[in-house]
Image (cartoon, rainbow, N blue to C red):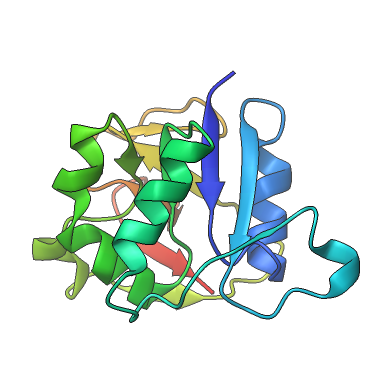
Length: 156
């Protein structure tokens, strides 16, 4: 079974996406938030996305945990990882966020309501449902419009 590393996994959005993906993936939960002592065995601490060593720390962790995917749920994390995605690809790890050229222009929704359907797109295919979205131009966690041609990035 493939592994996905999820950041901000202690937040409601992180918990929700981990639950949605748990049938198809092994989940590695990470966070830059403080981890309560009772949860330390379930989560790995990581630096904040603005930290200069962030990308290297995440690469090391993903390699140590043999993860094939990284899903950054923080917008600052997405910016950092989008800039270094080539480094991850060299090691066979795909960062699931829009490319840096598109990231600043993409509409973003923080902490969406639980009744909105989440899609995790990778190469035009939803990793949750298997549905194909031919109009998607980027990878990442999003909400798709009813028409299937508008995509809004989802973050914490």
